[in-house]
Length: 519
Image 1 (cartoon, rainbow, N blue to C red):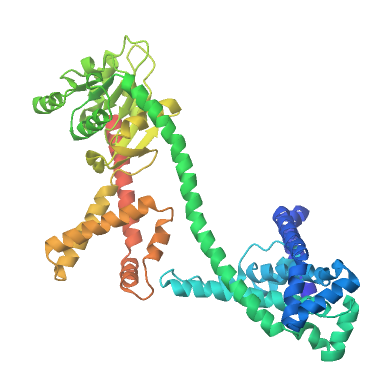
Image 2: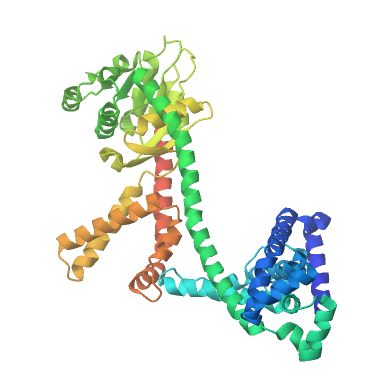
């Protein structure tokens, strides 16, 4: 009665979700599950003679071999397959209670979902919260318990079939399944059909299920990151194939830098280190000191923006935001007679694409150049930066790739958001050092430990395929010092503080863009 009510409720719930088609969602995995179970059952039938030999020797001892010879002589080789159907049926039937135990959201729905063969959730996995992987033995113990329980449920449902199989295998004469059932009931009652060898079967198969559960979960945990790593390598390989092409294009391009400050110097250093011809790089810098430093590197220099950019294929706008408008108007005048304007990459903070396009459009009504905005952060100065890249709809993919190739000399360029990120981490390290010093460490010790911590955490973030949240969980022992510190962070409003900081930086960037765009 309870099962009928559950089935009725489940039917209505599924129909209300997506009508009739909801009943067939997941049918392909379900059919695959049936196919896999049939294959397993067929395999057990094929190896039935081996099972027959094992069971007979276990039950009859040394007399078992002679018994098998007499049986084959009297009933042909086919007698080695006595009980094969029961063996196959036990294998097939035993799979579904296993799946139901492992794969249902609640104990009651497990029966219903098993009936519908849409077992998609792990009841035991959800009921027993997964502990941290440290200590590892606790994590494995949970998996072992789940596998053992699944085997108990499976064996409880299917144990009568092995009883029939074994009874037929150890008898001298051929006994039908119905006759085997009658004789077992006659000897041990109805309970004999389900109870014979049940404890031993649970122990043997429970240990097998325990081991399978652990090994399978370990395989999934190992193969998941491996697959993610392989996918990442494939994606990276596809991108890297384009980068050499763009690098070759850069080799042929004439590149003008409007502004010769620190960031321009870092990009130029990265380009020349990768083999870009220094004579193809032309730097415009008004200050004598900076211009002379640039000249010492072997690139061409000038004090005239127009001269540097007149024949350029690629122009990097590396000037202060306050002078960006006047510089852009000067460049637009210099390009007025050109059939096509160069590609412009701006690293000037706070200047919007619309403002740049407007300022760079020639007064004679010529087409504006294609413009990209890039925000390299300060680690780019030492070749370890991350550059956020913005492009308008008019910028072609090939032009984006050219900009990425340009910036890859000093950073990992992507279409992203953050320019101020390094300062956040510097502030965090600053406070860590101050706290450690207050607790008794020397400033030298505190600084060294903080730097090494950042280096190690950064390496884990960049080399691991796991989410930062999972990395945090992995290094947090229950009731340990790390957990205490993280709870203190949470109580002090760390998340809210980070949200406010990022919003403040974003708002300031927008204010700069509006102010400079309207000037």
